[in-house]
Image 1 (spheres, rainbow over the protein chains, first blue to last red):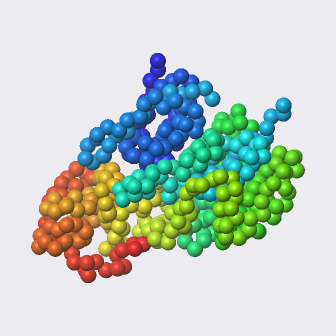
Image 2: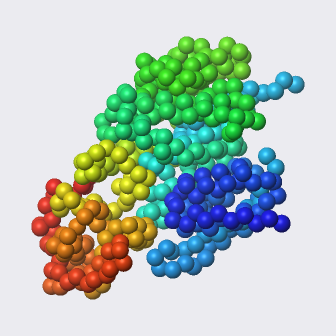
Length: 82
Length: 355
């Protein structure tokens, strides 16, 4: 199964959501997209965006990053039919 | 069964646009939401940057509203196009650098474009646009004479429906066509929020965002002062996203025309400023705990020493005799600078921008 990746580290909400949304518009249903972010706001916003659009959030996790960037947030989204 | 009419609703994340969308949904209209990110939105960011707001949920209010309503929401990046609205507003500014009327025209026009643009909402085929505007609600943009102007200049014309005050306005196409029933729309008027509260209660809406001073930094006096200072220092009116984002963060202190300090106020801001350390001269306290400081401009060695003294003032070394900062230059050079922290009385008020 194809796994696409999107790096939105350093961007603040809502930009990570906008980039995710724009990327998903270009991908076919069934594709898995892995999004990596540093804004803690994504922990609320990316799951909410997925619920609103009916995409399946397969996984969301917070990983310890280094002192300068803080935590890393990683999401895997399965794109649904529109 | 005939296809239900479809509308695109401008969703800000506040109560009025939520109610407007809900009112037409309750009349059987299929609604999708659109939200525009200008770079000046108070939304999300600020909460994410500032550690002290940890206790509050960092939700995106527009997304939250969409979820409550059960509609899809498209968040659109308009950062580049929006510059012209801020820099050259045809209808001028409000009390601060807020071009509210031009902004509303811009957003409705964008919604029209989205619906005409076959690359974006092609399969949606919207019939009309819904906004939460209320006659007399805002001194600049939401007046009886400006609402028709917004409809006209945006190109939406009679396909723009304001369900909360439609009864005070000429009949629009959605009403004429019977897509909505005019009798079940509203006649809200003026600055009172009571009718909205009552309608929310009637519709069972119990929770909504109440951003103080609206959802845009341009309506904020302190922010506008910092933006004006930026333009003045640059010698021209322009901005990039990083510029306007950094105006939302930290204390801004300008000891001289050619440089400005941006000093973090807490951990979240320090971390955010660290993200810019490769673009700016960056000061990090070494002898004591204290804030990260970026220097915007072209500082000389004496300026850096002065900056170090100011950072000392905002550090735990403020009462110490000596204070050491590590200075990192964008070209990779690093040095240690030792100074006496500046006393508060030696930082004149006119240096503090937007304070």
